Structure formats: structure tokens, C-alpha cells
Length: 416
Image 1 (tube, helix red, strand yellow):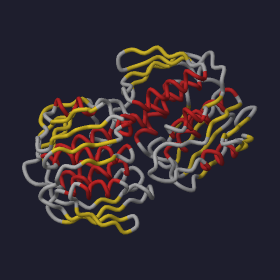
Image 2: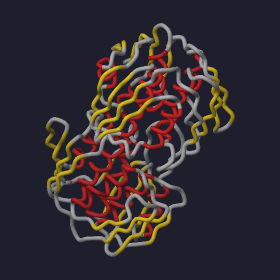
Image 3: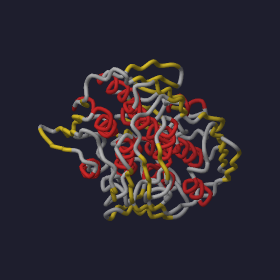
Image 4: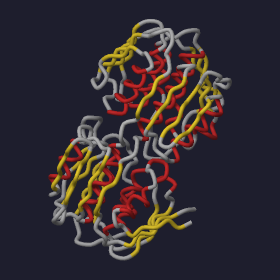
């Protein structure tokens, strides 16, 4: 099992290119199932979850031709309408093939998902929505088996805001007969990116970016060329790492407009931030000030940045409160941060952090994707050597993170 060894104390300095967004790329790759034509996607990130999704689509019969930072997907000869357990168990996003398969082929058999352990993410919202559109769905032997002659437009109101639920039903509705309205829909930029790709393929969608999305179904979609948006969570992670180490970095190929809550919190922590075109520059000339964080669906503070800010708060001046409202198990990194000397108390979904002047290196274990990034940031500021174990979580959602950090001056290496 691979590990990262980090020698703490180096300030991050330099420029880093932000990769394409994993959480946008995965649903957009699934959208290729909606058309028999070529879908060329550029700015695809090179990471484990993207590779897993490619394997899943290829198992179904999708032909994929890869080029540097991109690939062409052709679903003209799909012959297997199933997402098996051994593929789905490692990546919950595989549930996103359900809507496209059902909409275009009238049938889908998808394993109930596994994935990371941060909390319950039920698929019942997907199932109820497809049933409202006329699908017959049965759960048998751990699989969702769905059939429909042709899905019908429907009015669907989500009980809870669900990103993947919104994405799955939006893709299904693109080929449905009639108008579908999604109420209490997710507003995340990655949902907007998927909608823009579908529109480029000929879908008729309005209201994206709001909590009500309207889809006028069409009989077929065509091919397109589309560039995946930059990863706002990777952007935020590097900015927090620079702030924690007292460094100065510039992000290239980034978007500040989808990162406003994170940038506001970093300014509150004492960072100087300059935004221009596709660049974001952060400089931290002092010890960070503690900042309170409360996660909520977009456009509020993202749950995927909670762990990174907790790492920042462990060495900040003062005390802070972090409240997690999205996932019930997303404080598993707290125990590992304590091993480095962090002073954190947890009460339910609230963590209270008392900043300390110095963390101390130790061997720690990653428990999920964003916890991994949190522990890397903590290792960058800890005195001595920190070993981060179980980094396969990190590889699921960050493109060559140790190479990018090394280029910024971090003393970090991968142990095999």
C-alpha cells in the first residue's frame, strides 16, 4: 500500500495548473451514453475515479480514444446495460449511468453503490424520480433493475438537495417524452457544467444554477466537443495549503467565481488574494487567524473543503467552530489530526478547534478523499516527518498531488 512521506516546514511558492473537475467529469462521461455519436471531452483529469469510470463505460461497449488531457467517447455500440458491483463498489458516481441507460435503451441494471465512508448518500431520490417518469424499478440481489418503454416528463421535487440525483434525472429527462421539472434541485457548478454539455449535445434545458430546472425532452442527442470545468476543490485545497504554510502561490486555469465562499474565508484568515482572468494568487504573510465554518449546499460553504479548513484552523491564532451539516461521518480526520498534536473536541456535528503554534509529525491514516487532503496540509506544517497512509483515497480525486506540491517547494515523496 502506498504512502506519502512529508517533511514539514517548507513554504509553498510558485504556480500550479488546476486540473479538470472530477465531480464534473464523471457525470459528463456518463452523458456519452445518451448519444450514438462521438463526444469529445477535453481537460479530463488524470485520476483514479476517471480511470474507473472509463473502465465501466468500456465494459458496456463504449469505445474510448484517449489523447493528452482528453478523450473521445462513442456509445454507438453499447451491448451491456449493466454496472456490476465490482466496478460500482469503489466509486459511488457509477450510479450516474442509471438515468442515461434507461432513457436511451429502456433498461438498466446497476449495482447499489459503495464508495467512501463519510456518511449515508441514499439512492432512493434517484429511484423515486425515475419512477415518477414511468420507470418500473425493482431491487434484487443488490442491484437496481429499471425498465421503461420511454420515460415521460414529470414534476419531481427532491426531499433533500442531491447533486447526483439532480444529474441522473436531468440526463434521463433529456430523452424523455415531454417536460420534466426538477424542484429543490442542486445548484452546484458541476451540475451546471453537465447541463451545458447536454445543451451542446442538443438537449433543451433551462434554469440551471437555480433550484428549479426545466428539461424539454428530445428524441435524440448528437455528438459534441466540450471542455470540463476546472476543479474548485483542488483550487481550494492548494490555496489552503499555501495559507497554512505561509506561502505565495498562483493558480492557473482556475475559476474564482465558483469559489467565493472559500476565498472569503481565506481572506478572513488573513490571506491576501488577487484574482485576474483564470488566475488566483494568494499570499499569506502572517500566522492564520481562526475562522468559523458551516457547510451547506452550494452556493454556501462546500462540505468538500471542510477538512482542509480544519487543518488550517489547527495551527491558527485563536479558536474556531466547524459545523458539518451534509454528511454525518465527515469528522473522521479529527482523530488523525490529534495524533499530530491538534486540539479538537467534537460534539455531534460540531468540532471546536483551539489553534496551537506547532503540530508534530507522526504516522497518520487517511479515511476518505478530502480527509486525505486535510492530512497532507497538516503534514506540510508539522515539525518533522509525517507519513500519510492509505493514500489511494487521495488518488481517487487529486491529479498527481505530490508532483504538484513538490513543484511548489514541498518536501513530499511517495513511498511504494
